[in-house]
Length: 156
Image 1 (tube, one colour):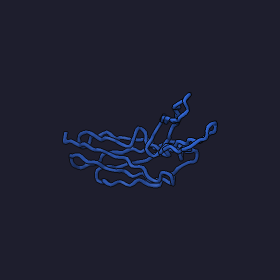
Image 2: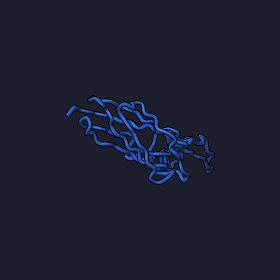
Image 3: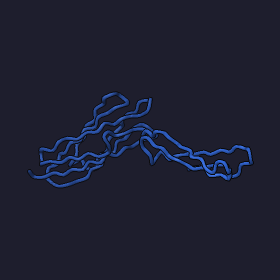
Image 4: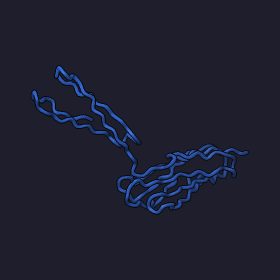
């Protein structure tokens, strides 16, 4: 989003303010805005906005785990939950919408900053499923994270 002074007197100065919606951007970014004028010596100038957006809390390697294998021989999967703030965060719970298919366990690696969430298939039957684990935190900026677990369980 850009805001700017629409009229600037000859020889005067004006303001241009650029903003980025960080809810839709992750990682490093670079945005460009062109300012046009009626100055015969300089019709336009490019302004660049560079930065890096870090999520409050991130899942590494991402918000998805695939559990694929034969019934009783499905490998476990895991993600790291990483707090990107200077103050610690607590995991206050994990909600599981398919408890008959998925079991989870959480381990604190670096208290308040890094957790390891391990997920395993406990299906008693073959078939495909999608489960959602909702990780609840005490961080008001990011009270919930969702981890998608995709299971593909075969007989042999």
